[in-house]
Length: 238
Image 1: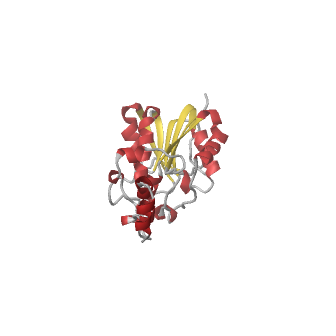
Image 2: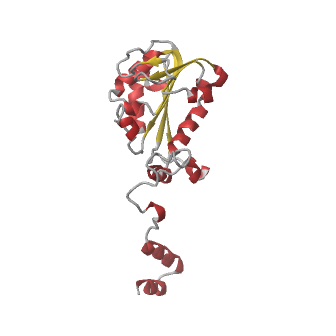
Image 3: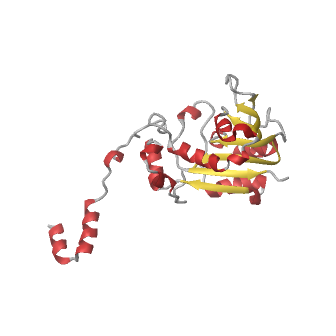
């Protein structure tokens, strides 16, 4: 009855708008209290945050050269540094990783060499370190003068149970937090922060959809109010 009355009384354009609002939101596959994938979308393809992480590293691949340190493995060092890398180190927190060349702790500086690296590739690392301020400080110390830290941190994201059960999952960040955290150590003028994500990408990522299930246009649209991934480029002054 309400629709019929509105159709008689309102101009067509106003009626169409009112009718859409009366219909409400079509939730479709999102009307659920458990995610479509509970493992960030790895079981469906490339996770959406990995799409953003790799976009950030691709844009700054020129920095990945000389002696490079990465955490866990050297996948991104090899892929984005290539022949520009003269020495590749892999840092791991505990023994047992066959790829590791260093067993150390960024939060304490234990076994972290000082002033030797041209580039640090630290993707999704700082969220699992409780003493994050010290981790940034020791990252700074590990770089040569003029060296570059390329880091990514999560904004909107689920908890990583894998990390939480091993060494912890403590932090989610904003661009303001990243600028201050890294700026306090490297100097604000030496830090660039880049944002990735929008409301659609954030919802899809929380549900565990993979990057190929959104269009490139949907993934690349940037809305700073919905920060899925934050990229930080920090340079140690000469």
